Image 1 (cartoon, rainbow, N blue to C red):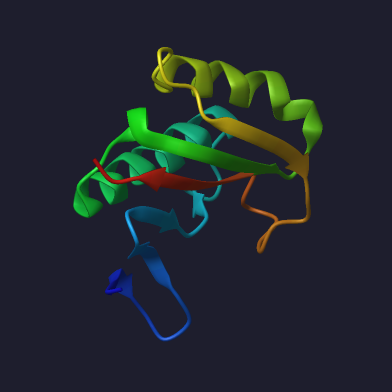
Image 2: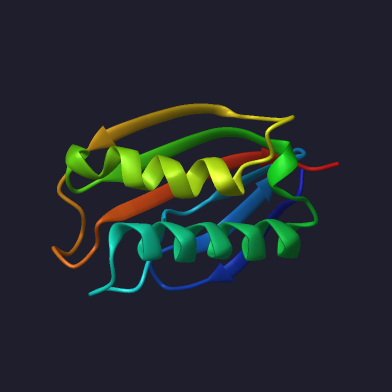
Length: 115
């Protein structure tokens, strides 16, 4: 099976396609902005990467969302719920973690199917 890497770098690729499945690296927002703004930015990045891979958010299989503070769960969820395809919600897990930088408030990781 062929493996396709989108935006590969020295450390990681932004997305990897294998056997009809797209695996995205964690997407984060702009440091210094609110959790709502960071969530919206990360989800736009998800949209862009899925489009590059030839799929879209209606085909997301699973999502993992990391928050720096679970107190932001409601705010993040508001942005998520406005973005996600309500006819095709993925499996999802959300947890609190220490992210790579204290300026990051949210990180979104998704796995999606190709059409």
